[in-house]
Amino acid sequence: KMLTLMRRLKRNGAASEDASVDNENGLKSSKVPPSLSADGLLRRLPAQCEVLASVEKRDCAGKWHSRRAILTSRSLLLSRVDDDYIREEIVLRQIEKILVIPAEASSKQVKKRDSTVTNRIDDPDDEFGGDITIRDDRLNSHKNSFSNVIGKQDTNDNWNVFVIIVRLDEIDSELRYTLRSTSRPEIDRIVKSIEKARKKEINNTPGVSNFQKFQRLVLRFQHWYTSFGIMAVLLIFNFICDIIHSEMLPDLTSGQIDVFANLDIFFTTVFAVDIAFNLIGNWFWPFVRSGWNLLDLLVIVLSVVDLTVGGASGINSLRTIRAIRAVRVLSGLNKIREIVDAVIASVVPVMYAIALLMVVTSIYSIIASELYADASPEKFGRFSLSLFTMFQVATGDGWATDVVR
Picture 1 (spheres, helix red, strand yellow):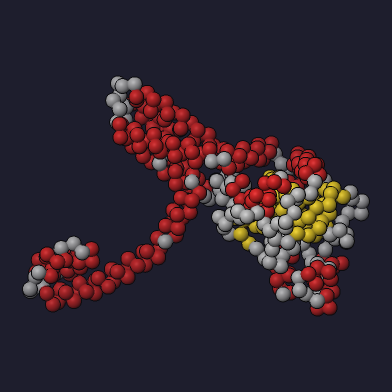
Picture 2 (cartoon, rainbow, N blue to C red; picture 1 turned 90 degrees about the vertical axis):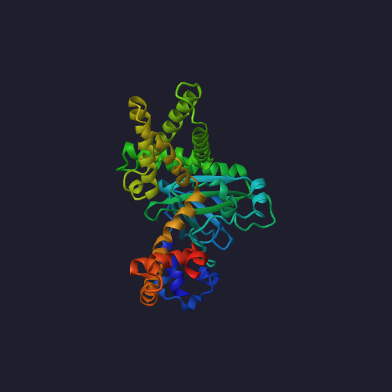
């Protein structure tokens, strides 16, 4: 239990709990050495600080704890109502988004808890921090996980919930702090104060260039339109248009070819802007390290070449690039990407299975060459012929008509 407590303290940036916290987590205060006491590890609140509001915070087990929220110029501090120690510190410049869930919406979502969010790290004894969710590069929709961040609620439907989403770039994940209050105007005031302090901190942070500020704006805009599934709809619609074009194969002199040409220009422009946003927002190594991003970039470059060089010089072979653009459906839809990633991960085990099949087939081919070379030289006269025959047998082709009879 002591190791578990220290792991939680290290992960969430907190230090330790005092005797009351130890009792809540099942540890006796007498068993806690002085080096782990609150005076030794937990930081105290600033000498002169103003309490922003009194809220309740949800832990990973779904339990709610009373907290005082103190807003400084750099952080949002959460402390217990009965002591002056900092329990959680939320750095303002790391806040990515704040979701406000009204009382009526939270009460409806309690019974419809979403189970689609994976890689969530929960500790039933953890009162520090929040829920850690591994991020997705592209289609990470905050709206689809309302019920995950609400968690267990009591029978009181008057609670208004707000979720502070912190971006952890070093491990490419999100940390969510779920807080609640019965007063909706109070929550609006808290959120407005946090947003105002956050913008001021970002603008005053030394070393933040104008390009980095522009990156944050681009990422916000990209997360907005991906969360509504706009790009997914465009990808599917583009795929359908490519199918219709391949089915109709309109004549170059007909008016239909102009319609498909305009659709080509529209989709290529939209996808080029999307990949440009992704490149700017994740410049440079975060973009390059993702194989899906490189695949999208390759498809977009080939599509632009198709529109420019292909249309100008009449190179019909470049029209086959239209089929390659359908690959973006795989990278744009999150569920399909999960299947593709699983297939790619299974390539190495499948190669081992193929190697085992080759060894077993070769053994039986050697035996067949020794036993049946004279009886059927066209099938077992040499090792290569026997190997081909054994593969034919494995597939079932000609097994009854050629080999057995």
